[in-house]
Amino acid sequence: MRQAGRYLAEYRELRSRHDFLELCKTPELAARVTLQPVDILGVDAAIVFADILLPLEAMGAELRFEKGDGPRFPNPIRDRSAIASLSAPNVERSLGYVFSTIRTVRSELDGRVPVIGFAGTPWTLATYLVEGGSSRTFPHLMAWSYRDPEGLAILLDRLAETSIEYLLGQIEAGAQALQIFDTWGGILSRERWQAIALPPLMRILEGLPDEIPKIFYMRNCWHLIDLLADLPVEVLSVDWRLPLREVRRRLGRPMTLQGNLDPAALLGPVSEIEALAAGLLAEGAGGGHIVNLGHGILPMTPVENAKAFVAAIQNGRVP
Amino acid sequence: MRQAGRYLAEYRELRSRHDFLELCKTPELAARVTLQPVDILGVDAAIVFADILLPLEAMGAELRFEKGDGPRFPNPIRDRSAIASLSAPNVERSLGYVFSTIRTVRSELDGRVPVIGFAGTPWTLATYLVEGGSSRTFPHLMAWSYRDPEGLAILLDRLAETSIEYLLGQIEAGAQALQIFDTWGGILSRERWQAIALPPLMRILEGLPDEIPKIFYMRNCWHLIDLLADLPVEVLSVDWRLPLREVRRRLGRPMTLQGNLDPAALLGPVSEIEALAAGLLAEGAGGGHIVNLGHGILPMTPVENAKAFVAAIQNGRVP
Picture (cartoon, rainbow over the protein chains, first blue to last red):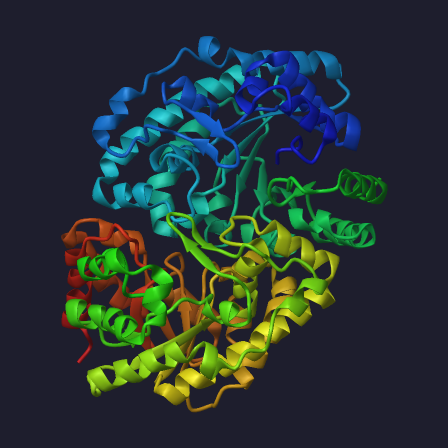
């Protein structure tokens, strides 16, 4: 999950002087932001500061982050004919700033903790690119998926192509693990996820070297859980709703689980956070477990609470 | 699910002359809107035109519907002390317009099809009242639930009280079944849904007469499905993601199911809608089945497609 953000005074200070895209695109600044949670919270890995939508901008889609509104694509791609406006970018040229950030972070960390790179799945990228921004019902994307599934498949395939290049570039720059976010895959039924979202995702996973550990995250995946067991990934990251013990049982094969404290729990009292941390460690026993939140950290999280969670997990760690 | 709306030219015509709250509060107009889908689509029941948030306004919370923004509560209730600003309304006086709408609809339908009343669950109402409008992450409500669960329980209990009066008023006015929407209950884990959302919901269900058929809807309920089997309701309405056959198997007791075509499927070609309708009828076999969408109809739905779905179901009906 994203670790840096508005809940950190150090991040807000940088943001007061630079807009979000500028932070992402200035490797020295992005590296500083990447390192903030490692230094402040003491987490055991760094996740590069970037946004899943950056490769779409690299493909030629105009991307804006507007105050309060989140990401916006003023020219959404809503049918087959619009796909032509996207290019196959030279990722070194158009996304090299992310690779530089990773290199800087690796060098500054000097082996202290590993660095995780990431990307969104083609389906999840498409929710933004087709809607033109955030959505709750995704009407344009869903409409397209029923109207012209073959056309949508072309778009998703193009997104997969660029994602592979982007992730390979991250590995080359020094990323030691990759997280693939299918945040919105869970809005699809089983049949439709398999038919629409899975093929371009598989193309990405098969385009990456076996050696790099892969973490797959999906929000809202309970109805798809047995399908996720078949993915060629080492780690499955689930949201805050699912009891890890039950996830492990349903997966039916040994997989490391990542997650899944309710991010909102960090808004409660520290005593409860500590109790939940202990419960989470117990829940996750019986196999590999990367303790994490079940979704992104909330901007209003008190930093002391995030620290308390990290400390409680580290103190409770199985030796 | 809501049947009327912007996808109907007849509705848009009325809305061009009246704002949303005015439509809800003018029984002759609300009755006309309620009857539109019955007359235009030929559906087998009418659901009263109203909004789940109306009882909150009746309790004294200022409610606005702003163009494009959806509902907004300018003075959200975010802690225990703010609850005092809510009153226990005389529902006949403050929500009597809904009851009048139901009476008018009953009289105009004259037995043609039954009329369904509805309300939101306290938890789902609270998502709007506490956030101050729509949200994707519900940070204020979630924060409150961890910070002061007893205080939140007081709010939810107050919402349950008013909801009971409101639903009893709907029955008295002639509603022949009730639908209870827990649209956002599924964002909670099992333990938290049981601890927080279930008690005020049970209070409502136990406050209603046994004789009135009750339909319970939850979006995103797969991780709670066995708990829902225990609710004292006749019908469980599920979203578009869940295969009905599997839901029936997991419920473990005979229950009528409602749902669950993906609303976005109505944006696709008619030939596919007809194929999906046939599949849905087959999926729903093996027990009672009220065919419906799995979530609200999308504003961009072509009315011909909605008609085609209703016709396909009625023609495919088991005799």
